Image (cartoon, rainbow, N blue to C red; front, side):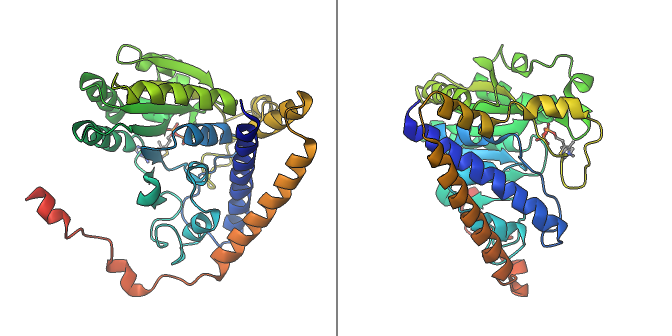
Amino acid sequence: MKVSEIKTFYYLMKLGRRFEEAAKQEYMKGNIAGFLHLDIGQEAVSVGTMQAFDKGDVFTHYREHVLAVARGMEPKLIMAELFGKKTGISKGKGGSMHLFEPKLSFYGGDAIVGGQFPMAVGCAYARKIQGENAGVFAIGGDGATNGGAFFESINLAAAWKLPIIFFIENNFYAIGTRIGWVSPFEELYKKAKNYMPAVRIDGMDVCEVYNEVLKAKEYIENGLGPYFIEAQTYRYEGHSMSDAGKYRSEEEIDIFKRRDPIENLKNRAIKEGIVEKEYFNQTDKKVEKEIEEAVEFAANSPEPEIDELYKDVYCKECENVVS
Ligand SMILES: Cc1ncc(C[n+]2csc(CCOP(=O)(O)OP(=O)(O)O)c2C)c(N)n1
């Protein structure tokens, strides 16, 4: 890996981690309402994927704050969205599960488990018939691989050789349901391997995630059809803020915390003499400031006006598209 890449990975993972910790705190203070699904522990997946898949369309599930940060969405616009403020990326009307920014080709946050896959396949089909080279990236959790939408999506994507990467963030749990209780096997890449190239990687290692997504991107851009990646990772927190996560043992959580993606990247880079310790200290300070500013921005932003409720609900121009 290049030194600049390692530095960027560290900065973005740290920014994502501190963003999530601040969001958790603001939720507990009552400044954020509704659902809040944290990504703490899974940052290598969010950052490695978005850094490698730097063009093309992105469709995500609801655990998407760090994906959005890594895609280039400003943390203050995401925080304002969580606060339900007018300045939020979705004008305060979407909240945590709906971070949407066409300028970044980021169609994020689907609250329906697996709902992002059919939309992503539709988009990949459009890309193909328009003869465009950039493909589509669709990410979801392990639980989503047990649903019909997932199987229909991999089937059609393979049948029509669509340019799409299916990326499964296997954190072993769908809320409190362990994957092995509801799937006949835990090696989730096997669900796709008769349809497309399908691999399993270490989702706690940002470099491995980055390199595999680069490979997948090249494959789909060459018109060879879809590609499937399963990354094993772990969320340190409960499923959402309303879940204490008591179904997992402290020992299990500790095993993954010892493999923390951020600390491990930093320690490895220092030990191997690739990056100076000072870079990490300075970056930590910079991140702290950015997150403080994001919270301040969100707290001081106005609420949306009442008439905003009726805007962005119906697409008048779309009538011409379908008629
Ligand atoms: C179709 C559908 N079924 C059930 C739910 C309720 N639900 C919300 S999140 C979730 C768990 C999904 O777990 P997983 O796909 O592994 O993703 P993770 O939360 O671990 O990131 C469930 C069952 C839903 N939102 N949509």
